[in-house]
Amino acid sequence: MSNCRYCGSLSFGANCPFSPNQKHEHHQDGSRCVYCGSSSYGHSCPHSPDGKHRHGSDDEHCVWCGSGSVGSGCPHAPGRRHER
Ligand SMILES: [Zn+2]
Ligand SMILES: [Zn+2]
Ligand SMILES: [Zn+2]
Image (cartoon, rainbow, N blue to C red; front, side, top):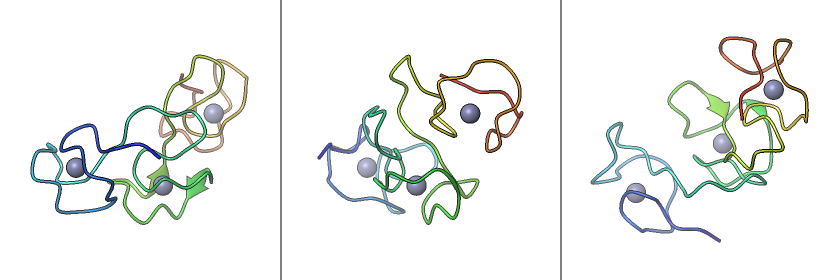
């Protein structure tokens, strides 16, 4: 488990005292959503500002879909481009 990068708490979701958007955001972990800690991708993140799971960057996988691809064609990224 990781802690919130802003306040150090193990919590997820709203009410982070130090986050710019009041959401706890956890340390970069390629296997987990930084907002909710789930291993899912795509819509239905309960805590993300835009409703999408975003994983930590590990330089090998897209933060939005987990694919190893680069460039355009990401099904979940806001700009449709895979992002590390
Ligand atoms: Zn926090
Ligand atoms: Zn999430
Ligand atoms: Zn992607």
